[in-house]
Length: 193
Picture (cartoon, one colour):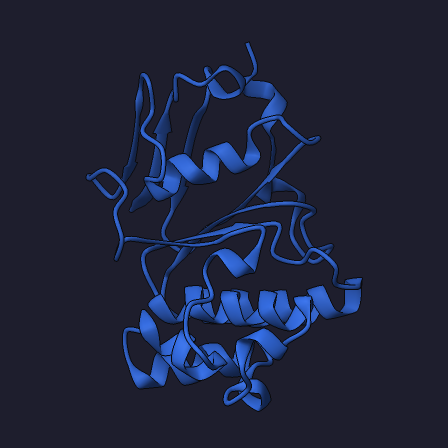
């Protein structure tokens, strides 16, 4: 089943975009800065509408409940006083919230105040909130920024397991973990006019 379908976008860097991501699939958008990677995620999240062509999640335009996105800056999406409360805001269940806290290494931080967390801890808390929503499509914008390779690989292994058990599709930007097969990466320059 196709979860995400791009057929053009009408924005200069992505005019020729033609892309599908199926249930349970992972895809990493690669390329230099300002080539449209984050723009593609904003379109997939429904934060921007395509000027031409279409973007669909399932057979509908993107909307909350069908898509959850981790932004480059986690402070844009952390809203509650503590990590646990923030993760529970969009969680589909208490069990899903707890699994997301565990997988992201936030279980020990669950009762911590968000303002007191380090940048890396805030990034993990934001990721836990996205996973806890368990929508058909998860969007991750440079999810491992500031993490060393070992930390990123461990976190990614947990995210993959969480997503696979729920047949969630993942579209991400930034360097793909070395454990990802080459065929899960796409160079955005191929869509440039």
